[in-house]
Image (cartoon, rainbow, N blue to C red; front, top):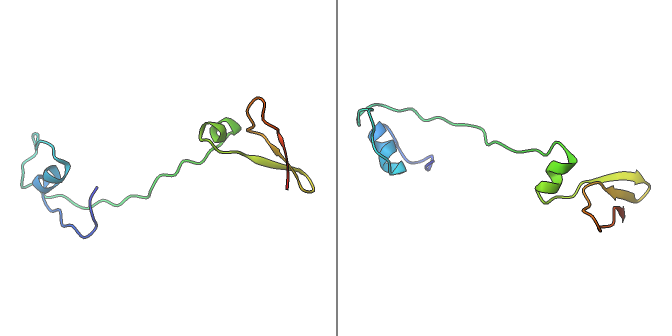
Length: 80
């Protein structure tokens, strides 16, 4: 990765930035800029939330939530 302002036109420029060998590709081979969307990881299960160090609260009653990711010994009921 590099700054959007930095011009990278050849494979040699890319290799210089990445501090890697040219390999079989000629140094003057043209390259294009490729933009990609950042990947976000969205937890899909209660265990995913727990392993990410997050808590998932589920509303059970007026002002009462259950922490469905509570570990053993932790209180599962949270009052708001």
